[in-house]
Image (tube, rainbow, N blue to C red; front, side, top):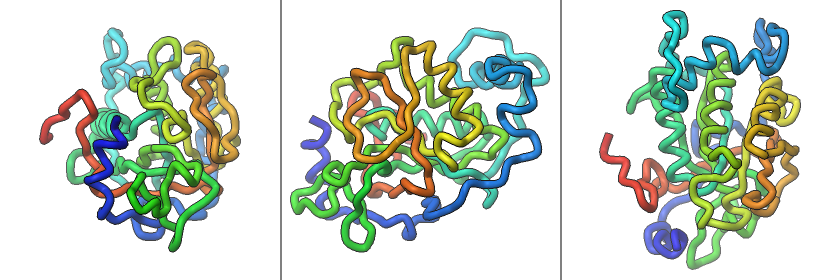
Length: 264
C-alpha cells in the first residue's frame, strides 16, 4: 500500500550515493574506545541500563513513569565531527525518523537547526550506477529492495550517549518484539542496527541482554536478509562494511501512514 502511494512522488526524485551526503559514514573505521567504555566501568551489563542516568533517559523519552533524579539532567550536545554515525531500522523509515528526531531532541537537546536524523537505506550487498541506492521506481533504477537493502534512519550520536539511543531503538518495538507497522512486510522492512565495529561494538552485549526481554535475538548482519517480523531478529551491521545511503528528499520528515506529525 505505502509503495503504491509513493511511486508517483519519487519517480523523478534524486537518490544519492554515500559521498553525496554529509552524514554518510563511507568506509570509516571503528573509532577509538573512549576513556570510559560502555561496558567496562560497571559491575554488570544490567547495571548500565539500570543506572540513574539511563533510567532518566527512559523518562525523558516518555517510556517510563519513574521520577527523574536531579542528577539525571543531560547537557545539550550539538553535532560534532567526533560523533558516531549509526543507523536503525524497524519497519517504515517515516515513523522511525520521527522517533529518532524525538530522541535527538530529548537526549541531546537538538532542534530543527541541528537534527541529524536522515531516512535512507542500508544492509544490502549491491548498489546501482554511481553507487546509487533508490526507492522503488517505475524505471527500476537502483531499487533498494532488489539490491537487498532495508529502510533505516541514520543519526549522529556522541559515544557517551550511545546507550540512550539503544534504549530508544528498543522502544520502537512492543513488549513482544513486534515493530509498529507489521502490515509492511519484506526484507525492505527488517530490523537493522548499524554500528561502528558491528557486533564488536561495546553497546551490543547490553542491547542483547535487554532485547531478550522482548523475545528478540541479536545476530551479525551479512546483507540481503529477509524480513525479521516472525523471528524477532535484530541484525547488527558494521557501518564500515554496510554504509548508509541517504534516501530521497521526498522521504525526509514525512508523516506516517496514519499519523500526521505536524509542521514542528
